[in-house]
Structure formats: C-alpha cells, structure tokens
Image (cartoon, rainbow, N blue to C red; front, side, top):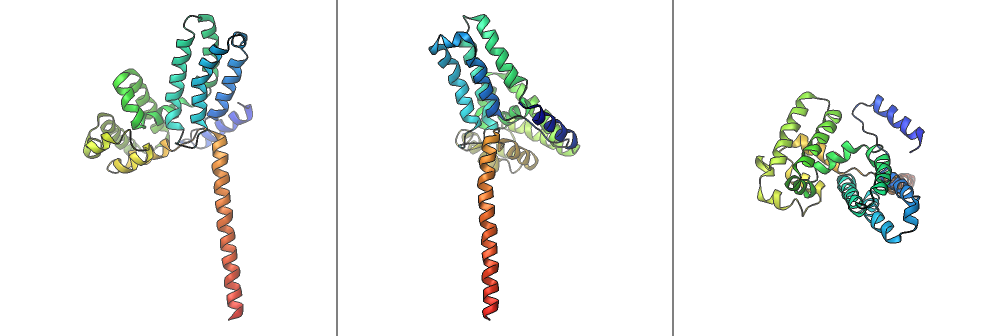
Length: 254
C-alpha cells in the first residue's frame, strides 16, 4: 500500500472522527498472492500452490465482485482461507509460518478488520451460523461492531438505542427479529433487503446496518460504480440541456 494513500487515510480520519479508511481489499489480496507466489517451494509443487491459491482467489472474487456488497462477505472468506491454508500446510510448519506471515502482513495488519467484522456481524445469513458454531468468534464480531458503532455514531443516546437493538438482533427478540419470517429470510434475502424488511422497528440500528453492509471494499469496483454514475449524470445533464434548448426554440416560435 502506497505511503501517500496511508497518510491521506490517516489525515482524513483525523479530520473526520467518524470516518473509517481502509486499503483496497482486492489490491491487498493481489499482493498476498504475489507474496506467496514468490516462495520457492510453491514453484516446485503445483498442486500445493493450487490448494493455497483457491480460497484466496475466492476471496478476491468476492472483494471485486458485483453480485453482492463485498464488506459483509470478505471477512468470512478470509477466515475460511486462513483455515484452509493451515490445514493444507499442517505437515510443513516452516512453510506455514512463512505463508501466515505474509497473510498477517497483508490482511491482519493492513486492513480495517473492525469494519469488516461489523459487516459480518450484521449479515444475518452468516452471523447466526457463526453464533451456533463458534460463540467466541461471535463475541469478537460483536466487539468489532461496538467499536465501529462508537466511532460512527457520536450521540450517546443513539449509541444506547443501537446497543439495545443489537441485543434484540442477536437474540432474535423484539417485535421484528423474533418473527418466523425474519428468521426464515435470513438465508433467503439479500442482507440489505433483510434489514429493510425487518429492521424498521429498530430504526437507529437499521440505518447503521444498511450503511455498513452496503459497503464495497475494492477501489476497482468503486471506480467502476463511479464511472457508471458519471455516465448517468452526464446523460441527465445532457437531457436537461436539450430540454432547455427545446424550451428556447418553443419560446422563439411563439
């Protein structure tokens, strides 16, 4: 990650206290794959290289994908990739140590994991499965969510409301989260749509959740989205211009 980008990110967060800045996940994954590819042992064992690269390529596809917002999926994908790497190299401790050093350098130490942890916490299709299998991990995700909430929401009263509403979400309690439809649709609805459908009675949490789960984590995708917006914006501007021309012509004719 370029020093200028890091410096700019730090400066922005200093000036805007509720802002999170994080590097491009797709770029960091590219660098991680390059790092692993430079390890000599992988050049002599194609099958091993394939095993290690596959889960990372899945994570890269998520980070730079268009199907769903990436922030709410990327942390689960990286956790899976790390577990797969450990399993693949369990008989090669020295090599495993080297790979995990690269992994931690690019993912654990560079990325704003709290933001992705909060997004995973707010992803009902993933969070409740994690809660059933690994309570410790679920607790870590709640801690990350709390940290993000405290940074993004400055009002104490709103923080208290969101915290209580998050308790209801976790426990599937309250007027919305306890309903059979809300529980059934965890795996059926896109998380943004799920929060739109079932989070209305917890308005403060709903607003924060929709903001977080809709985040992308690739600057490449952001550029693509901005490009599409620019085309639309330019088209709208042109339409307005031609409408004004038509009005002017009409006025002249009258």
